[in-house]
Structure formats: structure tokens, C-alpha cells
Length: 205
Length: 205
Image (tube, rainbow over all chains, first blue to last red; front, side, top):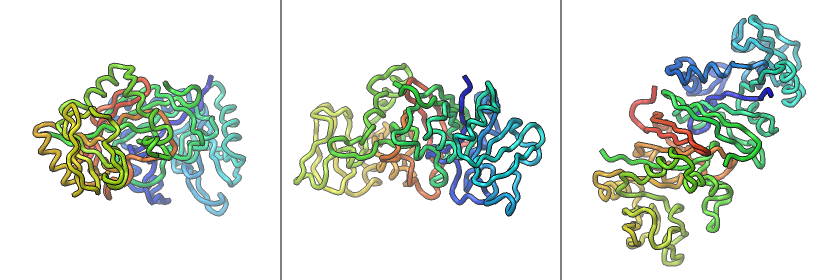
């Protein structure tokens, strides 16, 4: 059964981006340092966690903030942060309020712009993914929407021992009551702890 | 060199107590469930983490909320939550605004009420502890005070896969800039991840 899952890197105080996010600094102050583990890959555990992110992923969903740009596409042309060959290599469904034709990039990545909400985006992503998983790749708002809707099956948190103090918090506003989380595994590596939670179903006991 | 350290159990969304704390429910809604791991001790890893809490502890510091009661001791007599033989068995320094004579309990626990602030309380605790560690046992406010002051050396977080959604958050308001945290170890066990961070000194790299 294909799953809907996410990988996201979080500070120990719960932030996935630092304060004062801007077009020049989309991850906010201190936000880039959160992701050093994924570039440096200092250990086999972190290499495995990094590789597992892309394994068996048939489609990706991301929020508009993560895709970048602002307002309407006509007024503010923007094709994403990733250049001509984005690292996704599968269909990517971007949650947005602004309609746009699909944008085909090199290497198998096509961005589809979905204006009728996260449930519709997931239906399209599932269809595109076939028997592979759908990866909700961020940001915090998109992940929260899917958790609140009971649609995210697995959360892989990469917890970095930094305190950002402010910014974009991941595990807020998860529904009332929030879904049950079950610890699947935790692996420590230099500078990062890789923790996997299963969401929904019976509470962990 | 004796250390100043803490053990604290936190939900994955960062809370050490749930919402609507009261005298009848001092841990707030959902807060008791956070601590089930420490009562059930389902694994050797959790047994080891629980035993390590008390190892080499020569004195304890706690905030007034954790000791309990309210206002002045004369108007509202209160000797703590733990009955006649509290589980500390060492001198306990309670941060409070209300002066009170030391309260000697059975089993080696004496509560000392410190009204001249956390730095003074730590000086007294260090002296009482000798070459053993000082354990700041909670709550969140007391731990934050010592982190902000650069006086906490080690944080042992027991992260439980529950989302409380509201309540008392641990890793807020840690100073500007906050101190560096360095990951020492992470161990997963059924229903809880035991993570140790060293605080201060060089940033983890």
C-alpha cells in the first residue's frame, strides 16, 4: 500500500525555518544551518536517511512558499529555486491559489499547480505515483494540512541540536484532537537524530 | 567536574505539561500520559535512562510550580506532592518568592526554600552536592532560567510521540542568542526516545 510521507528537518525547539524569512533568505536566520547534515552526510546513518528520502517516491507535493515566488505567476514569473534540472525527477504538485499551466523541467520533474486544495492535490499525486509513495516535502504549513486532514501516514523528522528561538514551527495546529503518533525508530548520527513516526491508527502504547 | 543537568519528558511538539494545569491536575490534560514510559519501563533502554536520572546526584533544584502549593506557606500550607518520604533522598532547593524554614522529610530529603534567585540556589546546591551533580528537575520555567543563564551543562530529553497541542513548552525563551546544543546520544525505546544534549561550549559541527 503506497504511503503518504514526509521528511523534514527540525531544530530541537521545533522550527523548520528561522525568523525573518525573505526571498533572499527563504529558510530564515539560521535556517540553512539546519540542513547541513544533509549536505555533509558525515555518517552512514545520515547517508541512509538521505537516500531513503527519495526511495520509492512516485510524486511530490509542496506548498507555495516552498516553491517560492509570490502573487500571480504572470506578474511575478518564477520557476522554483532549483534551476533547470530540479532534484525531484517525478511529478511535483504545488499547492497555490494561482492557476498555471504545468511546467516541465529537465530530468523528469514537472511542476503541476493545484488550486483546488490539498485533498485534490493528494488525489492527483496518488494517481501519478501509482504504487509508489507520495512525498509531502514541505513546508510546515503543507505538512500540517495533511496531518490535520488525517492523510499523512509517516513523519520522518531529522532533529538538529540547534535552538532557532523563532521562525516557522512544524508541530503546531495539528487538529483537535491531534492524531496519534507512534515511534517507529530513532537513530542518532553526528549532529542529527533521525526519528520516524507513524501517524494515525492506534495510539502508541 | 560535577555537572548541572536535567532530565525532562517532552511531547514531540515540545510540551512538558498539557493545557489547563490545575491543583487537581498539575501536569495538565494529557500530561500524565507523557510520563508513562518512566512507570512502565518497557525496555532495558528506558530502565537505564530512568536509573541514570538519579545516578551521581548530590542535590536537586526545582521550581515552585513543581513543588506545588500557592502563595505564602502560612496561608496555604503545603509540603509537596510526594508524601513523607519523597523520592529525592538529597537536599532539594525550591525556587520560591516566599521564605520558609527548611522542611526535613524522611529518607534524606530536605526541602530548602530559596528566595534570592536561581544563581543563589545553584550555589547552595553545588555546595550541598560536593563532587556530585546538581539535577534541575523542573519544571520548564526553572530549566529555561538555567539555560538562559548559561548554567545548565546537560539536557536529557525523553521525547514521547504524543502531540499535546498546548500547555507548557520547554524549549522557548532560551536567550538571544540561545546557547549551542550538541547531540551526545539518542536511544529509541518503545514509546520514547532518550536524547542527551550537551549545552554551551563550541557549537556542534
